[in-house]
Amino acid sequence: MAVVTRFAPSPTGFLHIGGARTALFNWLYARHHGGTFLLRIEDTDRARSTQEAVDALLHGLTWLGLDWDGEPVFQFSRQERHAAEAHRLVEEGKAYFCFASPDELTEMREKALAEGRSPKYDRRWRDRHPDEAPKDTKPVIRLKAPTEGATTIVDRVQGEITVQNSELDDFVLLRADGTPTYMLAVVVDDHDMGVTHVVRGDDHTNNAFRQTQLFQALGYDVPTFAHVPLIHGQDGAKMSKRHGAIGVDEYDRLGYLPEAMRNYLLRLGWSHGDDEIISTDQAIDWFDLDGVGKSAARFDLAKLDSLNAHYIKEADNGRLLDLIAPRLERLLSRSLTAADKTRLLAGMDGLKQRAKTLIELAEGSLFYVDSLPLPLDKKAAKALSEEGRKVLGALAGVLSGVDAWSEEAAEAAVRGFVEAEGMKFGAVAQPLRAAVSGTMASPALFEMLGVLGKEETLARMTAAIEGRIGRESPAA
Image 1: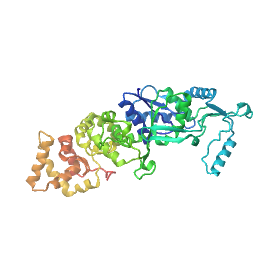
Image 2 (image 1 turned 30 degrees about the vertical axis):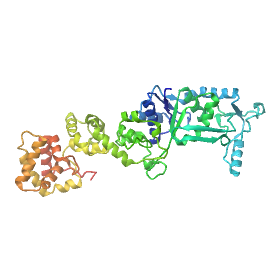
Image 3 (image 1 turned 45 degrees about the vertical axis):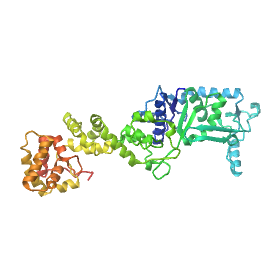
Image 4 (image 1 turned 90 degrees about the vertical axis):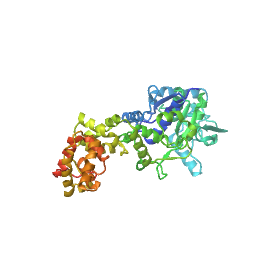
């Protein structure tokens, strides 16, 4: 049997972390088995569904690299099909018209609660003829659910779960206005789309029993269910904004790489031995539902930062430049020149070793392309004391005599100066670092000199010697 999975979000907001992980698990399961991954937009709640939310969902999935097969299915457009199936069940005696009024339903609920029972519909119209209905009352259609025995689902994550049918009720399939309920639309769509595996959050586990009854009543094959535990914050509480429950597109803006986010989401509730860093190809090769744990996963931003730092180090330098260029241009209020890009590429190997996010990479790269005078952080300003500038004045004369400039040549000249003057290396290196970068937290000193080149290095030293320094850096 060919595997078909689906991701079915409601377009009422952004693609959150839990939804992104659900999409990833469905995508990986389909790709692992050489199957199909479908996308369905469950937009039947017209009051809350927006095009902006649809766009955010599509952008989030695209950024994550989760490509779906075929065109997205929009659930609202299939209402006639859903309604037709509800009426078919009525004709077959498997569903019925219910004319209970809102007041009657409220009375049932209040009576059940007063008696300590779970509130549910009392099936008063289950065996009555529609001719008995009050005039001008529009009915709903309810499933004639089994009242005896039990319904069992064999869940690929939770195991075998059984509920007594007496605990379930005759739930509504079609509302009085003719619109389908979530239960009906999901079951009909899953069948029509050929979905074989329903992988979703375990907050849907209770729905699976009712949906199983509906699949069976409609004569459909029941898909395999896999209900994945939800994601909690690091403190074990339900995810909220303080834990990082923001839209996936926000992580893009915060400077995370999609491959890092995929790796992180994969490890939220799924494991493959002790492996932590898992490439997408490995994930497709290894992923199966047996590796999904039964306990809630905990979101840890520090782990995401660590993974992102790893993937930044592994990323192609040209790609990183393309990713940070718009951020740098906003910081500079100008476009990057060809010379800027050449310098950034030359320095990228050193720059990317220090960054956990693309924002940090952009900010750490800024000194390479910023104009003079450079802004200084507090430690750099301290290093450029009167004594520090005096040292730079003497060193500048030595460096100006270096003809074939390179990282190695610059290092040899500086170390020769230190030895000749009988000074400690730090007394020379610190003001030099401050002068050429404006900060004491920068890539290796001689690497920077090699990237900047002789002319720019001396220009920055001269500006520092003359006291032409920029405003204090905001990061200081």
